[in-house]
Image (tube, one colour):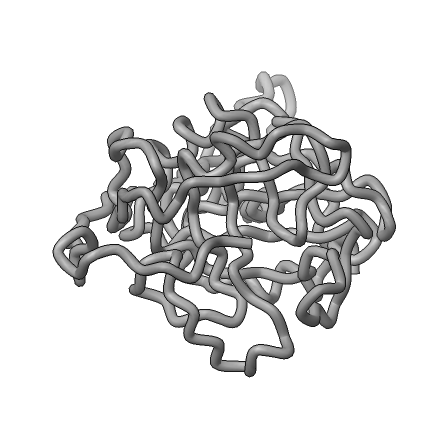
Amino acid sequence: MPSSRRPHAAAYPTAYAAAGAALTLLLTACGTGAQAGGRQSGEAVKVSEAPRTSRVTPERPREIPALGPKTRSRIPRSSTQALVVTGDAPDANRATAVLYSRKSPSDAAGWRPVTDPWPAHNGLRGWTSRHVQGDRKSPVGVYGLTDAGGLLPDPGTRFPYDQGPAFTARGTGFKGEPLTGSFDYVIAINYNREPGRTPLDWTRPLGAGRGGGIWLHVDHGGPTQGCVSLPKARMKELLRSLDPARKPVVVMGDAGALGA
């Protein structure tokens, strides 16, 4: 969980403007047919061709694999980037993350992966549909991604980015591994927090008992308190890839929950 210290207000811009590009896909189809003319005795058969209408059923947009209808319905229509974090089991603390993208909400091609699978860790005790403070589980759900920060300078993200010493990680993890560098780069997951504020902000709309401070952050080689951790190079890649204008979300949970 992050430190409760806040950086100076000047370190965190209140708003960033970003422009996204919308592409449309034009589908065309044509069909032809043949029609035979009449025949008199001793005459050859004359065949003339005429166009004939045909119907082409558009291919259904590609969905994100392994997501059930309930989970898919929670992804906002305006979102065109989705980081899908799939846990091995409800009580497992290892997961796999893949970034998916679509060109626009009406893109006929649908969602496609834009990264290889990345190894990830989640909460020590797995996943939960009702996260509470101290349960050491990661919350299942679909959450917006709007704010970033870290101990290290901005690597080139389009998110508002809060840099400062308040992101210093200390101590050891559940396997005795050092936590140093875990918060070098973070992206706040919008679970029980106010979007548009530094990840260090401790406002809890659902109340303190429902936990908070759930981040994407640098992996330290072991389970987390409830966050999702990725290798450092992948966190930098993610920060550079996500665009707030595309309304990115994280879809996270164990495979069974996401398949519902």
